[in-house]
Amino acid sequence: WLIYTWLTLLAIIYVAVEILTYNIIILFYFYYIIMESSNGGLKATESFSRKTYKYIIHQNDIQSILEILEEQCIQIKYSTNMTNVQTVSSVYYDDNNHNCYMSRLEKEPNNDIMRIRTYNHNMNQIYVEIKSNNSMNKDNTPIKERLVVNPDDLKNIVSCKGYAFNTDSAIADRISYLIHTRNVKAKVIVEYNRATFEKDGMRITVDFDMKGQKVSSDNILNNLTINDSKSDTCGIFRLNYALLEVKTDQNLNPMDSMPIKTLLRKNLVRPLNAFS
Image (cartoon, rainbow, N blue to C red):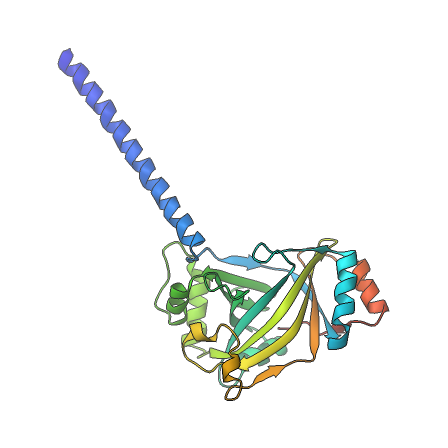
């Protein structure tokens, strides 16, 4: 009887230890993923499917438009600088014949375009994105997919050397297809300031102080910001207009929104063919 009791007790202790060990492993696994994400490691794919309406703005009217939006809309402020304005830097990829750009302009099938984006020059949180209208294996709903990566993961993805275990591989596979099959490379970097507002379930942004520069290096980390020191050899082009975008994932018409009505009535904006 005593031996039976001891054996039973040992069995219970063994099972308890096994369960505890398993739970510790699971907790460690999730802790690792969380720490990877907080340190800028690869994160799961994010997808956005929404309607976009674009309007062109003359440079001289930017301040008037911002004042109207500040009065009639909610300002979306960012924790990084506590304002509703941030600097957006985007590196666009294309082949030597500019087929990605032309296919999006003409809204052709499989018109994927790849870009790498940072906000406020934050190199610890880099966005690798693919924008599509009639994308591979998808319907014709406009969609944007993206990964959030750190510099080391960015270099691995762009060189198609692989990606972390906790990452959805679909977008990485498509990036590999664009780079290896369609031979896209970093071509141009575009940078601007973006003011963000919200009204009636719509996100309204104004992009101003736009400038661009030809990519001058194969090192992607050197191409994530405009390089003013190379303005002589890789000239910086500046645009004398701005863009207003209205984005919504609902069936809403921006023409029904008071701020857009006001801007149109004052002839401060003009509708633009929505492509990017």
